[in-house]
Length: 183
Image (tube, rainbow, N blue to C red):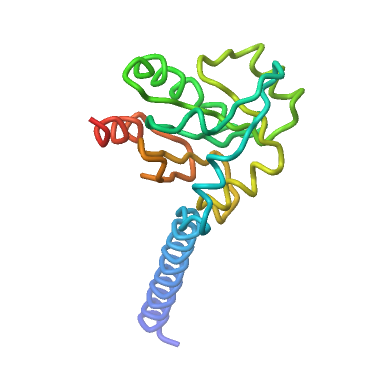
């Protein structure tokens, strides 16, 4: 085979491999993005949430009905989840700045009570933390977390309906959008 023909075939082969790789990467990214998008909540999930009660690490009972009537961020998290642990100081800072303005935050730990207690001893949070355990996973799924991933946050309006859900770590922009939506 002539050297020129060989070079053309090699270039053609490289372009084909590069194109196939780029297409596969784009397809994988699109599939991941789609899979991680929160879905619709199950029928009656919002009403079911407001009838729930969760215990705290100190043994108090958090009645969800008491949170109704003001904007509420419910954050599903676990001590073994690095993005969950990383976003908690951001959420705590937001709560400290905005709770006087009617914004509420509740973290629901999908974890062992002893692990949550140890974590909160090292990193106290100003807002309430409920122990949801494994049932918290089912509640999160009912609220639109079909992938079952963590962290998962649900923003509720004053009327108790869902305004926004987010699967993945919260950003300052997420909290600003929620604040702006209310004001």
